[in-house]
Image (tube, rainbow, N blue to C red; front, side, top):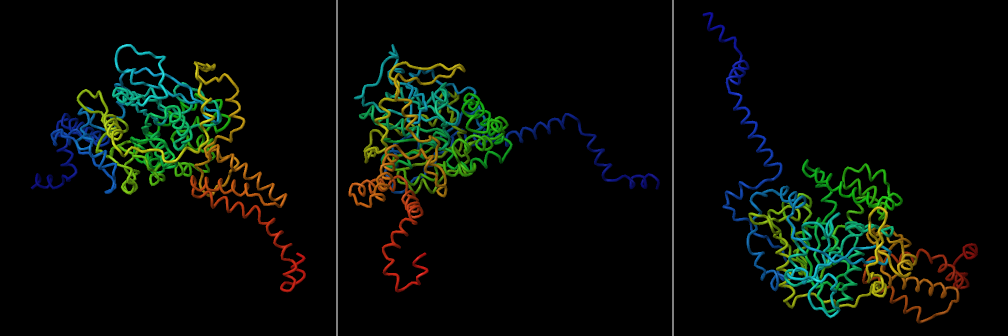
Length: 576
């Protein structure tokens, strides 16, 4: 009876511990390693096993478009690449691996650019890096060769992403492929990048469209016989889509492509703080922005909160201490909402191809405007299950990017189709006369003490533009309830001149109490131009006119109707 009683006294916990102790340590190590592998596989979103189970067939490209879209019927439906499957490189079967491999390696082709320094009207300097078709055709390449004004070869304008420039691997992939098929390519680097110093109190941001507008208008004037195409990547895609929506029919762009656009900056900002992996990307982007800020510390320290910039740990904090202060935005969310390209998709009339990966680790699928793209007949949205951010490596050797080939085929078919966009209205920006003399024709550059390069003009036109121009801060992206016309530079030169002329004419009219038909025509012309470009400007100006002139109007009416009001109102009210 004693042994049985002893057995009853052993608890279940003791029995479990004894059983656990009997399992070899090697089994525990194997189980731990398997658990870590599963965690690592899910954390970094690997899809190798899925691809293996599907026989490495890849996934189809999903196209979203309007049922009545002629761009799809006449262009995209003829592009074979969109009707095939995309299979990522098997040993890069993760969006994070693809994105990291593109950043650190990329395997770009060897290209040599020709640099042109371009000065915009506010005094800023932009580096235009050219790659001509003759540069990649093989044989001897004359680097002194320039494009003739009568050249009819299509011209592709490339807009890089955040803190990227023409030296980025994915930009080199794109420029080489487009030049290889006989097109001329120019990379419009953001101001302050590509080794160019900041030469004005203006910095670019995710919604700054004035630079690309001036570049496109200048190129259209210089090469009127060449069709202009534009390709934007990441933040550059957001800038391009916003520009196309702002200018609509006024844009001379014949066709465009948007690659991995963030679309909605508010949604993407929230996404970057959601998971541990996204927080790593957030820190990496912040480091790139801080490095950019250090290059231009003398200017930023004067315009922004340098101590806040130095301590920034996220993109949002950087924008709070730098972008919002330089751009005169009230809050970071105000900046994000005003600059999100999703708000401008409805006005786009240029044939536009948009490519996004559903596993993009930076630009979440939640920000993709499915309904907006489906509602616009000029937009075709192509989404893939995989691809990462701007990566899209394909083949066992990962030597090429899928989206680059997709853009090449789309633009080639569009160029040969009758659906190419033509500028229906003459440009009314009033910049051509300024731009004609703002490009340095010779190799005049100024090497700064810190190693940066700035444009150095040979006459006083550059300084004249800086003195006569408005504050170049990007006020055209402010919320509608902020009325501050004194600092606004988003309005174009011709509109500003018309407003000044109208204001002077109205002042003379009040002083002289005379009617002048020319004044009325000038005011009407100015108001019509503003109403075409900004729908809310008419109502804002009307409101301001009523508020500011009401005392004068009230006094005039009071004097006119004083005698007639004597019989209806008390004498005290009339004297008042």
